[in-house]
Amino acid sequence: MAKKEMEVVKGLDLKRYMGRWYEIASFPSMFQPKNGVNTRATYTLREDGTVNVLNETWSDGKRGSIEGSAYKADPSSDEAKLKVKFYVPPFLPIIPVTGDYWVLYIDDEYQYAVVGQPSRRYLWILSRYNHIDDETYNQLVRKAENQGYDVSKLHKTPQTDPPPEGEGPKDTKGIWWIKSILGK
Image 1 (cartoon, rainbow, N blue to C red):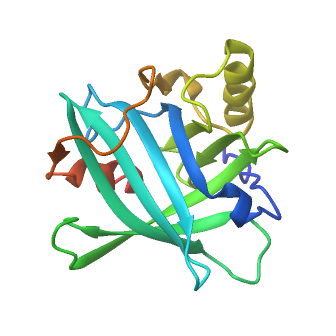
Image 2: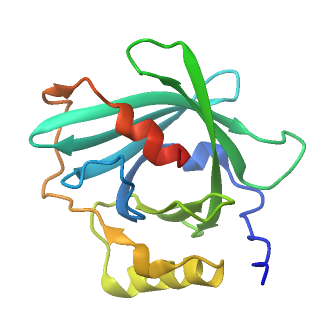
């Protein structure tokens, strides 16, 4: 049975979407460190209309990060279907790897988001805060479930209080980020 087409947010206000988002839960990836904590993404709008993407996570006290860029898959569409491009490996930008980033839900205040991709192998629940209450979380999970996701695979991302400031010691490997995001 073919799953119905995913519904994507229309008319996403990219300016309002910018800033820091904390990963509340995601589908674990075999490439992501099992003990990754405080995972977050910071989006910054560039002058040319593309978005600078900085993804960070902490594992064994070290910060892993990777930067890339996002842009609308179809500039003429009002659907929030973005392409995200990273260079592999991050410290040697030679091979661009592109993945899908579809905003499936955003609340009116731009505080919570559900992000997926057409294969439904990857799913992220994001929030402006590093903790959200169970009721809100369950509502976001239901939104993903209604889009055909197997939400039993969701794994909550541990977030500490307060979240880490600054960058901390670096994990230069960083490769897992790309693979986790692109589902490769």
